[in-house]
Length: 118
Image 1 (tube, one colour):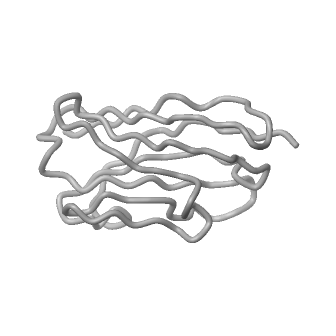
Image 2: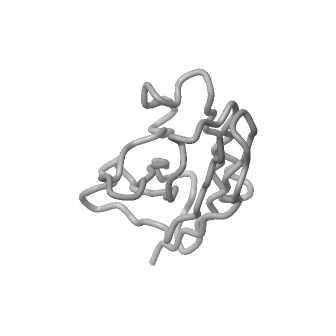
């Protein structure tokens, strides 16, 4: 059974940076599409970025500020977040799925809290 553990969240001032990590165990990391999502208080979970079959996608809100990367040797996907804004405050989740169907058949971590102060 695939398990995902996120880390790297915290409190940062607006304009600052954080790097989130997500470690996968229980599966062959290289065979999974990996995605990052977030959920702000009172809002629905939304897509942030994904690495899907060699193609990278970003939400409009993440373009130019966030960078997704993966290290297959470490079974880890990263989300580098720069120029953070208060509206980036959310719980960030990573997800894994062999076909990128995160909401359908994907495995999810428990999330890491990111708080951006103004």
